[in-house]
Image (cartoon, rainbow, N blue to C red; front, top):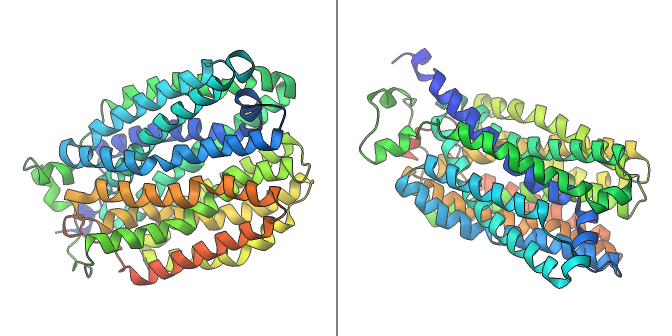
Length: 434
């Protein structure tokens, strides 16, 4: 068969890719908005008499949203493996949109007391449950519809939606901080991203209605398109581990990526504002610039992995972030340019790891168990090592132990390095033989 046929990017695949990514982008925008406006949400939904405790509680709720993600990944993953990827992607975006509406209109601590904190916690649990299913399914779906020779580049776009949603959230945060006073933001301005996200989700829902189902899933169900047989490359399969061993290795692989990601996209700006005295606007715009650079780097890292392999690029991530984490965090002070330099270098390095998560995970697990396996391994690792990172780092900082935060990330980058060494090279593998 000709290579041009193998690598063809069909219009239906590109439209499905776009519909999936737009929905992912909006979901991550809503999710990231919580972290961006954490100081204001803390004041709105928790007792203002102890700002440090309120901020810790806010990050605690942020972490709990992540802790339920493995359950969502398992439940929705099984559904996706049985009834299709598209159906799950429709359900999860509806749940996320409704959750955003509730956060955008719910009363504050001053109005209903402790019930405001309780309702916020419940909504974040529901969001986390849906988010686990969304992430697991997108990490299966996009690599499955990608041309095999470009799976790294296409797969990197899953993480682009994560960075993209965060960039939009921080950009909006910067605009809101420019146009409104801190008092106005605290009173109602922090609600704006949740209102906008709920409205935009309706557009994404419409686009997802026209997505095609994954042909890998359809073939598994016995209804595959005959053209599907021409989509894979003729190459040997990689050595196989047991599925549970692969799950453990993926948990290790993801740990360094997710901990460093949330360090630099969710915690660093709050650290700069609350601990170093940096202006809110300065921290936001520095984060926007850094994450925009990371957004540009993602497909480049993915394309590089299509040429030289997944493992070399993952080594670049683990080694560079492991070496740079502590000095870059220590470089931040009250001047916004220090945040800009540190975060940009860190986020571009983090992008090397983030770009490869979707393709590597899809290439490791078999089609019949792909989404449920990713849902468990990826969501568990993100919950344990990523979603808890802002809370852990804030706790360390509060107790004058901020240096331990850097050591925590470095250790997890070493775990990623070891996991990468133990996993086989999967570039270009036929997903039906994974």
